[in-house]
Length: 116
Length: 113
Image 1 (cartoon, rainbow over the protein chains, first blue to last red):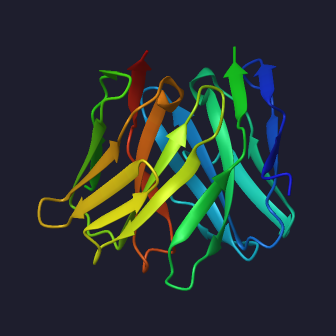
Image 2: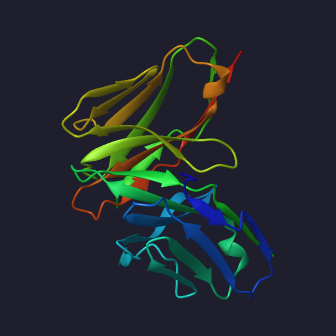
């Protein structure tokens, strides 16, 4: 298995532009998570899906952020319009739920976003 | 509000020594706790999981303890090697919270030869 695949690895854009980050989870994993990592705030959960359905999006900063999971093998995180404070590394992770209910996450390599 | 604290200062130790990293939490009742390793430019990688009813878990040179009274987990790496240098993150989860994981800020470990 190729693991969780994210694209692009690096994105540099100007304030006000739309940014779309993409994720392909591991086949057979039923949960998908979007995290954002910055030096100041660490790893923050933005949204997560279970069986393609958004379960909790309370971590999404504001309406400029949206996420979709149209099928089990693809998810997008969109920022429109982007702002300099959105600069961070965005991670996608997928997991399978263990029988006991615990999740073990497999992370992608991340998408480093810089908004000028 | 719930808080997960890891020492933000880097831990520097000599090769061969035991590294001990701490994860403290408040206002939280986790059902399980996990430790992840993160190398620069990469995503975190899962290392160990320990449940609330377990005191200790081992995997090769790694050992994790979980004290729900102290609200603390300790992560030990014995016979440390320079290749163990990385940032280590703890993460807490609750079975009834939609299986979400909340991460601490991580501690950077530097093992010097």
